[in-house]
Length: 289
Picture 1 (tube, rainbow, N blue to C red):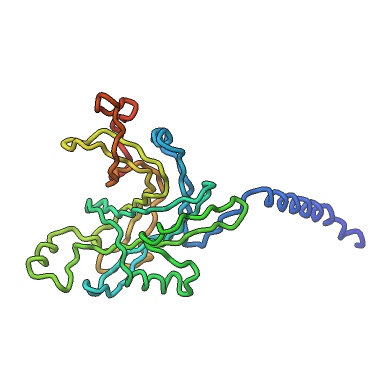
Picture 2: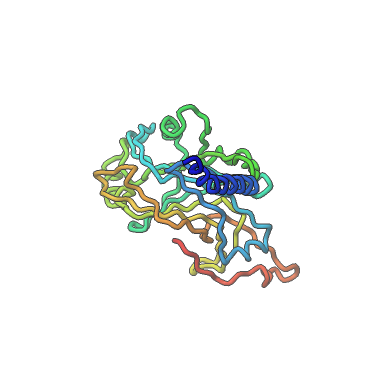
């Protein structure tokens, strides 16, 4: 009976040894990016058009963390009680240099074929902050204020220096309190965001990647495509029973090159007044609307 405890000595030594090796290995690796259960992390991804973007400048891409979109009812001045959709997110910069994030968030309904740009709504932002950041620890920014300062550099082995923001959408096709009868009738015929169950959120500004493709007839203007993050979601239920927990992310998150409203001036060949061949790109098909 005296020798029985020694039966467990070898396994304990083995556990202690492997535990020590695991600790050493942990310190040798970059710090893990911890997530809350309701947060999702998107690392920079590649796209076949990155080669075209790299021709223009050194390509960089920011990391992106987000929560599934949520709904909140807010009394917006001049619009009355409205249902706002919002996306809480954080931007992390592992590129080695400070980067200015000038965001462009668009929500696209796949079953309604409608595009909704995000809006800066102080009343909605204040209501969202009471839920997402009641102590003002994260200092949530909107799509304008987040561009006022560059995203600071985060080091691989240190805690990330994330900058927190929120994108907000309100359906412009819903009738407002000041609408006359003609406006109400016109809006009644338009698609509604609440009627959609499948949609994507496109996030531009996370990268300096862009490419130029040939004009899409009948337009004669070349198309600027920016490297864009596409997040796809599905909403369960109907417009009469809308709940935040019924909005579900549909993985994976994808990096695409999507048409932009950005205007650029192409370089011209001196003496001929024509665009150089090397500056022209063949038309390419991207993976989103």
